[in-house]
Amino acid sequence: MSGRRDSNDHEPRGRTEPTLGRLDDLDKPAPPVDDGLPHFVVDEPRRRTGGPTPPPPRRARKRGWLIPVLVLVLIGAATGLYLQQDRLRNLVPSTELNDVLTQANQALDAGKLDGTQGDSARELFEKARDQQPDSDQARDGLRRVGQAEIARADQALSAGRLDEADAALGVARELLGGGNDVEQLSARLSQARNPQGHTESLVDQAQQAFAAGKLDGDDGAGALYRRVLDADKSNAVAARGLDKVGDALATQARQAIADNDRPKANALVDRIAILVPGYGDLPSLRASLAENRKQDDQAITALIQQGNDAMRAGRFTGDGDDNALARFRAVLATDPDNADAKAGLGQVAQALIVQANAALDSEDDAQASRLLDQAAKLAPKSAELAAARARIGGGESKSVKRGTSSDAVATTGNGDTAEASLAVSPEQKAKVAALVGRAQAAVTRGDIMDPPGDSAYDLYRNALAIDGNDPAARAGLQGLPGQVEKLMQQAVANGNVKRAEDLYATLSDLAPGDASQGEMRHRLGSAWIDSALQRSSQGDRQGAFQALDRARHYAPDDPRLQGAYERIATGR
Image: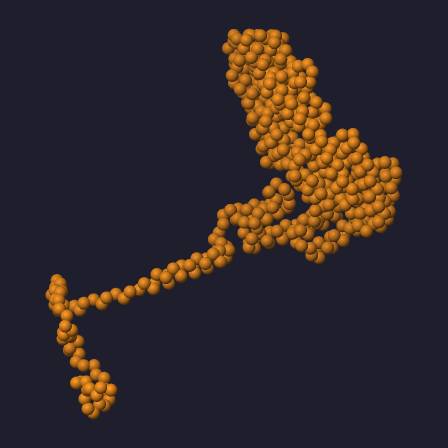
């Protein structure tokens, strides 16, 4: 220690009590401290109201730490909202979800329980569940659909409609996951399918049918053995009998493949898959079919390509086989349903009509008539053909014998009235206008080709028979294919597949060779698959298989086709 004392130290040093000091001295400024630095005096602004000068404001403390804290709080809140989004979503009413649930409940009340068109109660409740997986209303709706299917199965079983009962029971099992009601109905259904003594009778009938060579059909050996196994899966006699049916059908299928009869071979293989889903040779049969199809497709593709090349070169028809017509006909001789070859024939007909119109422009009616006669053999109902016929004096009126209405006959007389198309009288113009108006009304009704005489096709042709140059009649006739396509799309959307099929046939007649028909054809095939699945869900297996046959006709390469066959065959 230095031994120096602070001048402020006092002896003796004892305890010092704290004091507040004089309160009056609080407002007095502290005496200046001499720190050796220069002093500056800042004049304080005077207060407007006078009085003592207020003390200087305290400097705000720095709060930079608040920004990171706020950022962390925001991040935490956002994370919480994200983790709780499903719960929060339930608190916000969804108009779309409520609409779907309303439609589902209406379908349930109407008894439309299941289907494939998107408007059944099951589909709508499943749609609502997909929109909001936690929706109690959707889950409860599906449960109620399952209970309604149980009731439907019970009614069908009591009425003896076993296939319908089985289909309804399958849907109920999918929705409810089993349960006492499902198991009891399943037992009752099995007893109904296999009453005492009935199995032996079915086996005897199946054996007799097999001996008679009757393998397929409702009363064929395959269907009878199948009924026995559906009721009693452990029946060894029926299982062996069904294998024999599979062997016999496989033999027929191989012979059809050897004979290059692809449609028959396809039908036989599909039938084996339906009757004997686990048949051992089924994969090899399908492989043989695929190889045969590959070879045929290569040859057909080459012919189609040659036909298209001939079209581009202007060799539409002629002697020999080096023309488009000959190539496309060769394809149809091998594959009668080949859509590309049919479209090719339509293109040939269209090319002949174009040549005929050019001949008419050159006033060579004789050449135009010859060309149109050739086109008529390929596309007799083409709208373009009918329009071109109307340009030839008397030609259309002579050919319109299909369904000429009485008023049109009175107008056209003996068929020579169209010769006056260059000098049409006011009365004839009025008649043409009336026919065009009726034709337009027929289009609105959807009466395109039928009924005869009152269809849009006939009415437009009758108008052109009077005045082959009438623009409204010509445009209406040539616009019919587009109208048919719209009607077909509506029919497919509404699930009216038979109507759509009829309209497709009309479209093929009116506009053969139109490139857009390939898409429409495939859409029709897909609609038939949907119809098959719907019929199967309603217990109509036979109708379902018939619908699949139609689907194969229009869309043989649709990837859903085979899956639909297996689903219907196995009852899934």
